[in-house]
Amino acid sequence: MKRIYWIYRMYNQGYLFDKSVLTINSSIMLLLLLLLFAAPIGQIIFSIKRMKSHTNICLALIAFISLISGFILSFTVAAYAIYRVPPGTKCITGEVAIFFAGAMITTFFVPVIALVFSIIYYYRHPITSLNLPHHNID
Image (cartoon, rainbow, N blue to C red; front, top):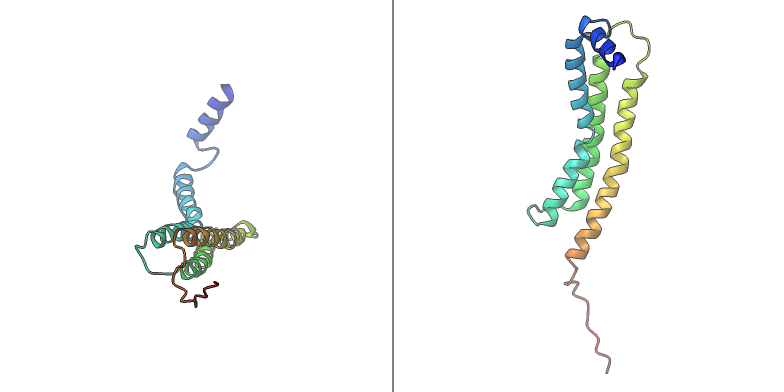
């Protein structure tokens, strides 16, 4: 209990970090990190709409758009994180890693989501009109 009070007191006196900088930077970075998951979440939403026939976009196009937008959003988040680095900083490895983390999230989740939804879609909507010739074996 004494340690928690000591940390709280140091925080209130401003020894640990500036409270205003922490709340602004941490909330912006949290939103930016959530933005890395926007492409897979959007793919899930549009794939569900495709399964319910609310849209005519095919699942492959949804996956392609999600893949491209995932890389664009990863680059945008990393560029903003690099822009927020104070001058004189010698190492921005963490900011560059944000791009690679977003790219890995996109390249892993987009094909998996596309595969799962395509399997579900084709089991729910079987192909019945192939116009194959019928042969009667009697």
